[in-house]
Image (cartoon, rainbow, N blue to C red; front, side, top):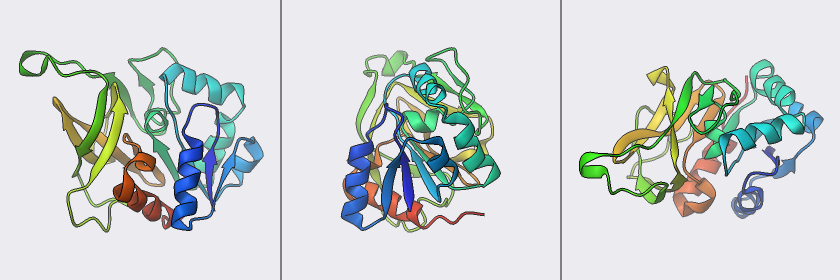
Length: 207
């Protein structure tokens, strides 16, 4: 069973609908006890970094997430802002992130030949695998995903980078650190490529 965290700032409905289409058991959770006991977690998110962390704190979800992910070692998948919250901090705000992945989120900055690129980066983009991680094991063709973001993760340890993409500059498109996974793109909006992400995550084992 995959538990999708409903903290008020994510596309929970779209994710649940895709799970049902794929025949994957999924439920929404917003209660700390349900998060502590979850088998697998998805943390979706849209909006600003500080708002995301504030919502998690106000609902008392941070200790429950820490227990499930750090103590019980349950797999978690952060999506878009949900991935950014896995890091320590962001240029977008002043609050600390969950800090499970060492690093910081930076705002896109373009000059020279790329100065006319629009922010946010919005649209389809092909990724390049940095290594064969848990989410991309079966990929044998160039995979394209739908992105909407103004900030991108900069991991302190390059081994945490699972995939990259290019928008003016090469940026982190997916991260992986043990049971902690994240994608900057939206799998729920990425058609068959996004479906593969959810199918792969449903097979990720715990400790």
